[in-house]
Amino acid sequence: MAVLTDPSSTLTLQDVLTPARQTEFRPVSGQNINFGYIGHAAWLRLTLPAPVNAEGILSLTPNFIDTIDIYVAKPGTGSSKNDFTLHEAGDHRPLPHDSFSGLDNAVRLEFAAGEKTIVYIRLLNTNSSTQLNLRLETVQGHTRSAALVGGIYGAWFGGMSVLFVIHLVFFCFDRKRQYLLVALSTLGVMLVYAGNLGLSHVLLFRGTGWANDLFLGFNAWMGLAFSALACSSLLDLRRKSIWLHGLYLAYAAIGIVGIGFAFAGRNLVFGPIGSSVSMLAGIVNFLLGLWYLNEDGAVSRLRAAAFTAIALGLLITLRDRLGFDLMPEWSYHAYGVSGLIMTILLTGSLAVWLRKAEALSLAQAAERRVAEEALQAEMQSQFRQVRFLEVISHQYRASLAAIRSSVDSLGLSLAKSDKANHDRIMRIRRSVAQLVEVLETNLARSRLQGPAFRARLAPATARSIVVAAHQRSRDLLTGPEIDLHIAPDAADIKLAADTDMLELAILNVLENAVKYAALKGASPIALSLDKTTDGIAITVTDHGIGIPERDLPHVFENSVRGSNAKGTDGSGLGLFLVAKIATAHGGSATVQSRECEGTTVRITLPARGA
View 1 (spheres, rainbow, N blue to C red):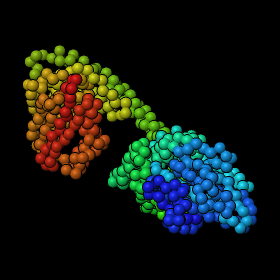
View 2: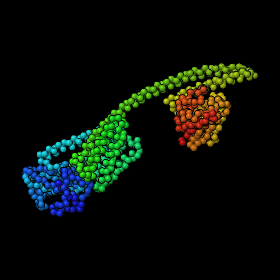
View 3: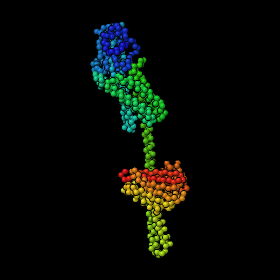
């Protein structure tokens, strides 16, 4: 076999038969020729000697080359144009009507003992890589090989189709985008290989060359885009490395650009760029697969093997496309074989991952059931506690009411001049009222602690809530004085509030302030109501023992107390309930404190409709 390039694409058979052109043919070895992305015509000259009389089939693949002119001479002839018979092929032409042409471009040759059969082949491919594999067989051998190759291709497409469906099923059961992206990437490999093998020309675009060119280019570059996105998703690069994720997005963007070139009929321009980017992406996949080899056991090892297979396939096939010499005939199928291996390994990887995810889901479901049962038990316990306190409160209120009634009767029987006993009766009344308030406050706290906590919102003014809480604190708390300050512009602001809850929250803060301020003396407590941008702020300031700085981030947690308050009675529920109530009203609670200097707690609430 010898080769002549034709940069002008204008040479005819008569031109190449001239002695001058014959000397320009350069001999090549092997049975395949690869020009890469040349965009102009090339001529092949086959000189086939024969020891016996015979017939044979010359088969040329692939069949996506635009135009192929095959000139066949009778044995022993070939010096003149009239000695040759022309056979036209290529995807820009209708399929030939002879029985030998299908997925390959095949012509019948005659051989005579001791004579040479001359064949000239003109190739012109303006929208993809120009490469040709030639095979000379007997008629019977060609029939057998065609049947065998057809069976292999059928098995390949059948296997890939099954894997494609498997990934769609995975996606239906577990809505992760990586399954869908791998399915689309698998479909891309199938369509690219269908174009490479000539199936698109035979089954879809007979004689419509531009459509077949578009099919080849579109699927090649769309496959690059989907493969890049699938690999990034499989490696979880969005979480692990934003710049590597960006690199894969750039690969996908280059694939989208390639689609534009395919639609513009300029695939020959973009082909070398896209092929080089695909090779680079395959190498990066391979390296990242090795980097994360032991990240997740069998999942990551199968993934690394898949990336290794496709990287090798891309390097071999795309080197072939770019026109590198010394590539064996089987390199033409390296992409298809590696694509199948990659898809099988990725399917295994994702199946293992899905099984692990299912096991984890079952474990989480079991944990949820345990948590729900524990929560239900806690709610039942809280319900029983509340019921117990309600019963106790009812019983105590009944007894205290009897005491209050008896004390009132005694007061009526005393002479007005008996001031000492009247004072005693007044103290008894105040103590009874204080005990009733303690019972009601503790019952309210118990109701608010559990998960059944709900705020019942109704319109109320800020002043009414703060004044009521201040009054309750005077009845309930003894110790430092509590000074009340209400800013005039805040008094009549309307809130959507559960007044009982908010009064309890303010009372809890005041109780803490009185308790810890009393440890340092009798400095008064300040309770203030002020206007904010979108609502109100209720502030309680004391000059007590304060809170250590290391404890401040945790003061609103359940059952947490300052480390310097261990010798003082308390449960650590006060500020926890304050934060919970503020959040239920769409507000928040904050605390500022310095140890040994005092504490300021602020509750901010939005105005009604804010």
